[in-house]
Amino acid sequence: VVPGRYYGTPKELWGFRSTPGRGKPAAIARAFLVANARLLGVEGVRSHLRLRKVLESLGAHHVIFQQHHRTLRIHRAYVTVHMDRRRQVYLAKNRATPRQFLPARAKFRVTATGARRRAIRNLKASRRTDRVLGVERMWFPIETRLRPAYRVRVQRAAPREEWIVYVDGTTGKILSKYDNLARATGRARVFDP
Image (tube, rainbow, N blue to C red; front, top):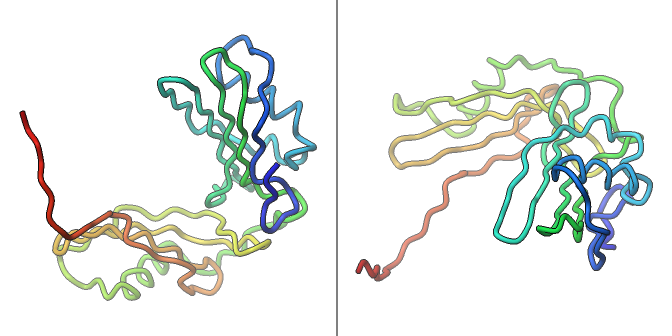
């Protein structure tokens, strides 16, 4: 068990193998969460975990659940269950927010248009080649507190950038921002037979 940082719940469970499961990976993962809800600290939020996707690799299935609260997605709040091809669970990761840390309601005082303007202004993005690709209302975790927030995606053509900006839905403050495109400089050789 690897302890989490803020909630007193485990961040990871590993070093075990469950008995082989039957059925689809998502159903096996849900059964695993039911059986281990107390250990993982997801007792009061299991119904808030929505299946996001099932990834298959050469040797495993990876089931990803995203946590929602009051119909809004919680940024980086997910639970994953990993199982081998025999459907034996061998790893679970938990980034879910426990029930006692969930706010009663979201207090959005900033509109989506206001969040969009603040994100663009913060990036100094006034060029005609800048485009807002999307604005999403969500929860943004700051230690043990969830803040109502907007996730704003801004694309730039020159230089090529795609910014993700999180704007506080109550105060309009920028909570976080980063360029989502990876870049590197340097020299390399490419072999093309």
